[in-house]
Length: 422
Image (cartoon, rainbow, N blue to C red):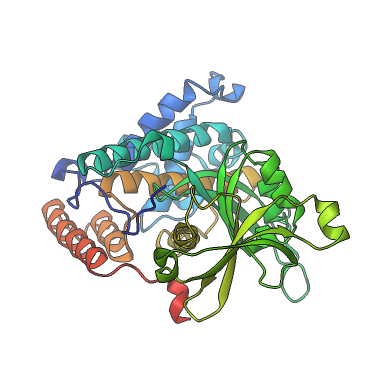
């Protein structure tokens, strides 16, 4: 198995749009097309087929997506007001939307529709990446392809009146929060699956409930605290690369040799071990696994557990794979700080889930258009254009210049982890 050390990029560094596409950078239009396809495969709530209902599912979710993308209206009340504009009715929703209809619609949208849209867009991303690799002569052999998934969770502060969003944080333990559990495709740098729930729900417990037989997972040491979890992964025939505590109890079975490539990658040593000692090892029925010890950027030793042999994944690739885990942290930061998905347009559990799913979908649509998620500067250019401060031609020229500059920076110097300088 080979893991690319270069930053993810598109087949071309030039934006794939023309001036006529710039109004809403094709995102809203492509979303409606993907949504229409998903609606054919998922049965909608019967209310949407009632002759008295004028607000369609596409009108509501399109309006929320528009709220995530535009720089002005970021509340459902403001979006309902904007729905009276002719341009918004043409590109976003087909008719004016009342506040009552929008408030009711959040409870009627089946999340399976948005899951299907996200899955279809990810498949498009994979096909484009595969074609780009094929054109560059870097395509992997089919037998070597493993869809590694980064798995982690992130918390979004909630309003006090969102009573379902249990958390228990804060000074008096009454803080509310929403947790996004995300599976992130390493190879394609894109979200693959998501679940939104109250922040109190355990991240490791959620992954346990959603393990896929034959899956491949990369996770931090929160997921490696319980030794029995590794037995469950083995039973599900899953591959994994999970960090564990350096104070973990282990029984060393064999010390494994390191190659020069392993040593250059910061690997200090590797062992074949069982987790736990004595009765604890017997209780957890811990399988044999490999521990790879990697020196971190500040000198600390990271202990990485994997069930793959040296011939399947070298120690150097184990270290590289875990470094890739930080891509999901970059992604959480992008969703929160660049897109600004922190102001709730709906407060119910389903409404919050819809909003976060649409944020994930928007990120993929932008990635498909630009080749990668927009940086802060690119996002600002798109926002200035929507505000009427940039003409189409000027935006096209500035975008091409900014994207070319960012591509040159990525090729010149790989991105450092944001936590390195903390």
